[in-house]
Image (cartoon, rainbow, N blue to C red; front, side):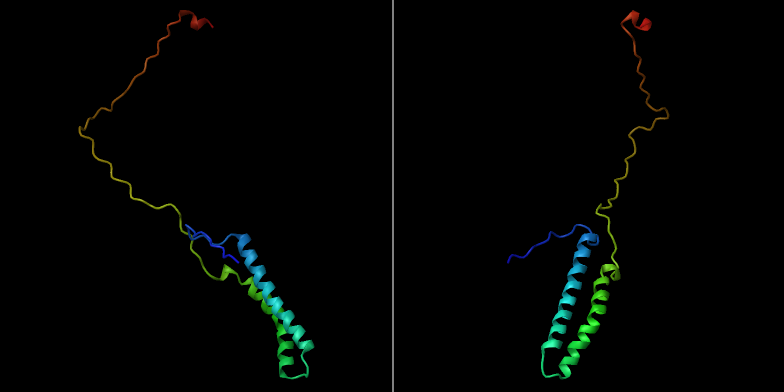
Length: 120
């Protein structure tokens, strides 16, 4: 079976809600599967001994542990989200070569060539 290789994340964003929910469901299903095996072993293993009581205790307490373990997602581990945009220092503006007191003004004069354009 081929292993899936995930591309590395560019940012430190937490996993998507869908991925986190899938991970929680897998953890819950695994724990409940172990509980089912313990329940079957409790019922099928003969003669009754200390292991029967160990399997019974596991079958009783694993549902609680499964819920707590599944709900203890990545919420318990703090994650800081970093911006993917690198902060760069802007280059300082150079002083103009000639310092003038009057700003340069560009004036555009439009002239109509059609004398009857005003009447339309």
